[in-house]
Image (cartoon, rainbow over all chains, first blue to last red; front, side):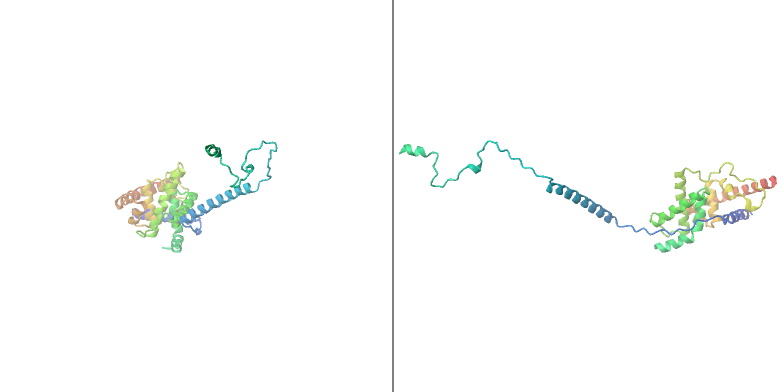
Length: 105
Length: 166
């Protein structure tokens, strides 16, 4: 008796729910997930590309200066550079201590 | 179970799943739609897996129930709480189809209403209900018996009110 009333109640509820608009079943789109190591590889490649790009940009700037200016100071005092030293042959060469041996003679 | 089989099973149980989601979401259609979408996403992404230890429908109902509980907590909605003025009001026509089923069930304690819905509306066995609700069989029986008694009293009370109101 109790069960009948309960069953009738839920039958009525189901009947009233028949009027409900059930949203259609939407098939899920397949989302292909790449293996995680591919994400890491992609990140490394991207970082490398960025580094190479930055390095190349820097080197291009260094290679192609806008103008090269060479300053020459003409009144500068002459310095004893290696270029001024005259080459001496072996026969012309005199020892700086040669006089010592002369005295002994 | 491959994706195609899973999709077929979900499509077959979609109507029941939606109705159960709606009942778990305090009869809120928008929330039920969102909850069911979340459930399908969980399943397809492998976050909820059917281990075939219970029937597919039993497992699906369990996932729906827990997702709905989480959603209700997040949205601060009052699950299964009767709203003021939303209780069974005397109808002009006391015919059964005019009974406010939702309001009557909302007057029952939450677990009793859930057990009765699963048993009488969705035709589940008490064992399956204990799986869906993750409670012992003895507890399910207690909710079932008390729920039936309380609901019967409420139905009779509503009928008397309906007749008195005429």
